[in-house]
Length: 147
Image 1: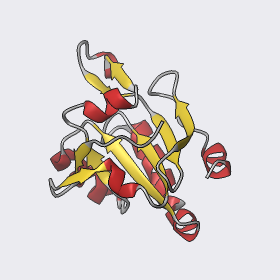
Image 2: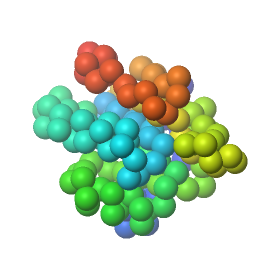
Image 3: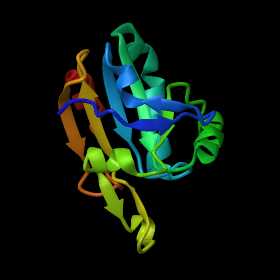
């Protein structure tokens, strides 16, 4: 699988094509929702390791179906400095097959499951982890071992 040609929106509501990250190794972290405990823990863990990823020339990108407005407030509150992208149209989660229905018991609500993909410089996905359910966090050491 290659990184798909799909347009998402950054925190300023600018369209960003996911293929713009081709050219360097990229960690793509799908997360269910801003302002939730597990997602905050996960993305803050990536943020705390960001210098290490930067030293290895690895880009970290977070993707969520929340609006850019919610993601912006959450990024500011948690000092997240890597790109967070809104998949409010839910196109990207379909392309990566990480849709999750019923987050927190909300029947009919579609979000992303928690998932991590790593792509190489050519955009080829070389690592895939999808949680059994959104409450499970990834193994951060395993991710580091696969970059």
